[in-house]
Image 1 (cartoon, rainbow, N blue to C red):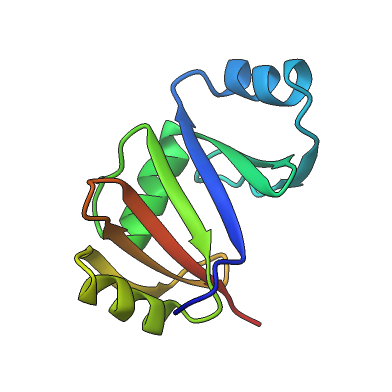
Image 2: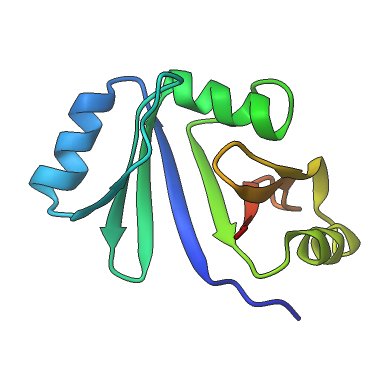
Length: 130
């Protein structure tokens, strides 16, 4: 059994500014971090016990290329923070998940793996590194 520490709903938005405005300003999700870079835009919004991460298409491409090597995610991808990406990846694979990319250290200092759950939902498992 593993422990999930955070659920992140990652939304890739064709119109990033419109999506950010809707979730942050209209819906009222407080902005808690800005991870934007030259590679693309990303803001982390608090949604109570979960987060909604709004990214633009360039950032989605950059994340997929970093984690998997090419663009694979659709409009929605669920990211789950876990204490140990390697063991959780192995556990989920044992229970029917398809591993698209093994645990990989990212430029944002986390260990990320990409999987497809048996129901077809694409997942990123991430472990924050020190």
